[in-house]
Image 1: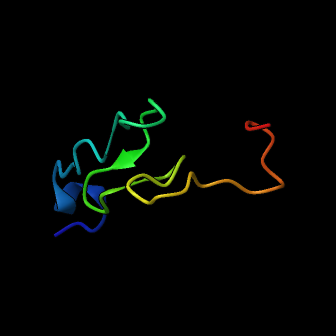
Image 2: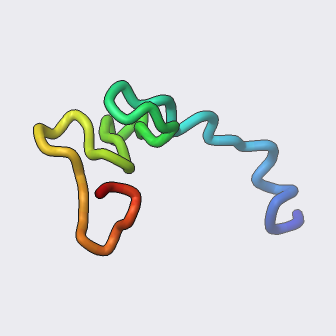
Amino acid sequence: MTKGTTSMGGYTKGRLHIRCRRCGKNSYHIRHKRCASCGYPEAKIRKYTWIKWYT
């Protein structure tokens, strides 16, 4: 028996991220139920001072 990819087969996780309702980016995680970009469905939009995409 070989080890590695051949023994694991063709396992794929599928699509984990879909389009977010609030920011429109493809960063809403289906299993976590949270957007990685804006933090939806939390009340405040996720933002940090070291990120330059919001002003």
